[in-house]
Length: 303
Ligand code: HMG
Ligand code: MG
Image (cartoon, rainbow, N blue to C red; front, top):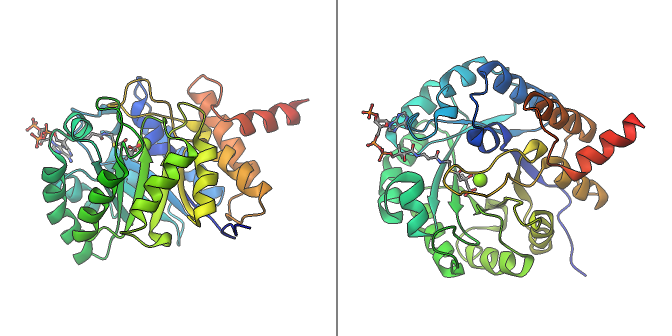
C-alpha cells in the first residue's frame, strides 16, 4: 500500500498567477486585502506578485506598492516572480522572502513568455540567483510547459529534467513542475515527476497544475502517491497565463484542501476561511468561483 505524506505545504499563487491574467486593472487595495485574507486563513507561503516588465504584464505593475502594503505575519513566506536582474532589484527593495525564477521546458514557450531561449533564460537567472544567495533569499524555480506546450505540443520528460538540472546548477533550491495548459494526466505527471526526481530530492519538488482539462486534483493525487508534498494552488481557481491562450487557472486551493482533508493530510490552513476568501475575491471579480468544493460548501451554508 502506498503511504501518502502526512503533511502538505501549499503555496497560494492566486494573487500572482491568478490575478496576472485579469483584463481589467485590479486595484492594489484588493490585491493587498487578498494577500492579508490568505495570511489570516493560515497560509504560510503566498505568491504575492511579479517584478516583470509592465509592458508585458500590466496587471503586475503595482508590485512594489502591493508588497509595501501587505501585513506580514512572521513565519510566512511572501514570494515574488523575478524574470531578470531588474526584477531582482524590485524584489530586494520589496524585501521579498523568496523569489521565483521561471523557465520553460519548451523553446517556443520560452520565446513567447520571456522573449529568449531556454539556455539564455538560465544565463539571465545566474546573476539573479547569485544575488538571492548573497542576501539569504530563498530561490524557487518554475518549469513551464512540463506536461505540454500550447505551441509545440508534446514535451518529453527528459526535457523537463534537463531544465531542472540547469536550474539546480545555478542554485535554485526548489523546483515547481508546472502544467501551464492543464493537459497533463496522472501517468504523464508521474513520468515527468520521476524524471525530475533524478535531479531534485522529493522535498524540493512541487506540482503546479492548471485545471483546464479538469485533471489537476487527479495529478495532485498522483504526486502524493510518489511522496511529493508541496503544491501550488490558486484560491477560487483564479487565473491563467497571458502567454498560454485558453489555459484556465491553477487548481483551486479549496479543492486541493478538500482532497487533503479527506485523506487526513495536515496543511495548517483553515478550510472555511479559505472558502470565504475564494468567495470574496470571486464576488469582487463579479464571477462564480472556479472551485467545486468552495461553491458546494457555500451553497450548503446558504441552504
Ligand atoms: P524584453 O522586452 O525582452 O526585455 O522582455 P528588455 O530587457 O528589452 O526590456 C523591455 C522593457 O521592459 C524595458 O523598458 C525594460 O526596462 C523593462 P523600456 O526601456 O522599453 O522603457 N523591463 C522591466 N521593467 C520592470 N521590471 C522588470 C523589467 N525587465 C525589463 N523586471 C522580460 C523580457 C523577461 C522582461 C519580459 O518578457 C517579461 O517581463 N516577461 C514576463 C512574462 C510573465 O510575467 N509571464 C507570466 C508569468 S510566468 C507564468 O505564469 C508561468 C508559471 O505560473 C508556471 C506555469 O504555470 O507555467 C510561473
Ligand atoms: Mg502558472
